[in-house]
Image 1 (cartoon, rainbow, N blue to C red):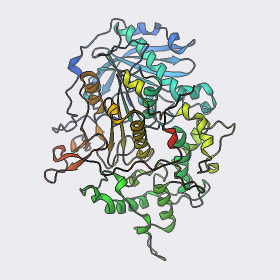
Image 2: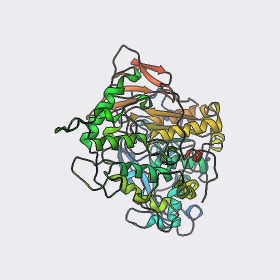
Image 3: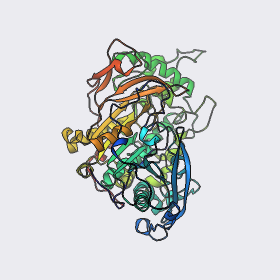
Image 4: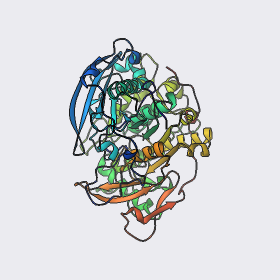
Length: 564
């Protein structure tokens, strides 16, 4: 059992619902269980040996540098899925501007820590600091973890933070790390001992932060759960969202009229499901592996001269949909520019990202904001190119490469993390509307090349969830407790296999459950029994075995030295 000192680091939780835990199950169905024994009984509860107020005097200069301060240390109660948990909450700043919050259980600490990832471009810790947001994991519900989170060095009110070199570094990699170190020091001061196990959970940019920790700070965590990682930050927040935003304009530029709206995306989705649902052997509205699908949007194009186009796609809508599915190619070499884009079956989730949130006409889409917000993070130009200046060519990658080893977390060689005893669970929803699961599959394949499957199997698992959108929700079964599975693996040596996913109703009762198997295996209906019960499904071989096709950024998935 690995012991950590505060200098080493801790663990992390996520902020948004359903990132790695299931909702609290008020019904009688226990299908949210992972099959792993609860680990809470294996560690004693440790009580504080110091007062909460005394933590205000803990010196964090060694962690964050001169100017690091603790601004408050207060006792209070936080409601975690209906249970009142007493915490000592410590807030402060690690120099120069990394805001942090650490919640230390007063009566229920089980010698574990959990660090919370932050999504988007972060800038706010309040939304990610409360553990009660759908943390159905029993171990989190019971207040057994010290919880920590950070704004990653800036606030949303700072409109120019992306132009500050220090704040860029704090966002890229430093903010989470120093917050973890600060939490370790507070744990030592409050309980008189270090945590025994440290975990990190994050999704979206939190998934990037998770993999960044495994690559840059391999001794920080015993277990890391990375969901839908934005680890290809340089490309995702430039060319991917740029292509999607421009593809949905009638002139291919931000000045054009938006073409595709939610009602027509629903028409498209209905046709995709009708064409491809049964390819996995079950007609259930979900595509187990969308790569099997070969749907052509032109098949539902409206007839020439049609006056009612409500149940078909116009020629412009067909063109937009085709561009979204197929992605850009270099006009000179015909090489793919992106690893992948939105997958078949994800259409209902596009609203609010690269198509408008409703059918009310608008001039812009959210992807426009993603690109503009990340320009100074991504490019080194004094005046970074705008979205309309992007070129979808191999040559344009020269503008993206300089900060690849700074912002990205795509190094497939996790030998140091493995050798430190670390465990990794990587997961992604097949219907993700923000980050393509194909990029995550490409990373898995890169790990196979760099480390070998046998080595990977000793410390990592990847799960792909049919019908699940970005970090949860969607038509699939988005609730899952990966934290308990990770704890059982780290602390008891029980490697995860099938993890039960489930869906709940408005009263939080389980209405459907299904197993999720480590990639590339899939769940297959047995042909008999309740289609909404886990017991009716068994492990099946991969439905699709082709590797991710060659693309312009393939060499970004090779071992590299990170930059500061």
